[in-house]
Image (cartoon, rainbow, N blue to C red; front, side):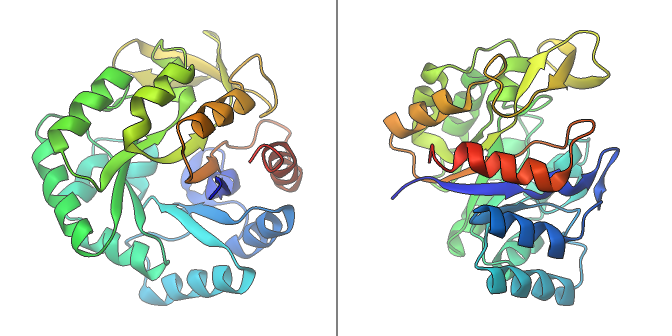
Length: 275
């Protein structure tokens, strides 16, 4: 098997509100499929645990018609914005599993902020395992997964085969860690998904990621192919060396002045030959 290319619906979200899709899913999905993507990473801006079953069926039918799969489900807005309620899914995982099942997906995103969340993560993973599903925690600022060491410590404590990690190099960079091949190698046993967004650190930027480890950090989004930020080709080579065969999801919002259709086409043109 090979890695498969997925597009996060984040690309269609309003720049200032992650709960609003600026582009209808019908348009976004068709553009992604035409460009060569085989999956979509689904978020609350399109469908969530608050959506009526009819909406879930509508989205699933659309994707089925286009031959697209859902690579991962982020089931509510707090998970997407990582606020104080982001851990809530772990304490009531059933509706999130129902949503993922309705979308034909077996991978769900979760978030952990405190040591107390470890017990909840075990229970949630056990319930997910009963339904053949996997939970994945993104490497992310403001969580227990800011660093490789922190992630490995938590993963060992959770100790569930169906609880893993979504590798995301930009979040490592924000936390002062160079996302080189060694970070992929150390996390390899737990890799369940990969997100890619390209940034550089820029103290004067208006875009701030609030790291626990380093405080507020200014970042600027770069074109996906700009190797002065994070080298996507080097990342894919490192993933291939450790035998990773899951989804590679482009998880970058639109940059100022960038159109969605062009961004989708450019992402596919860059990554499909690599994969």
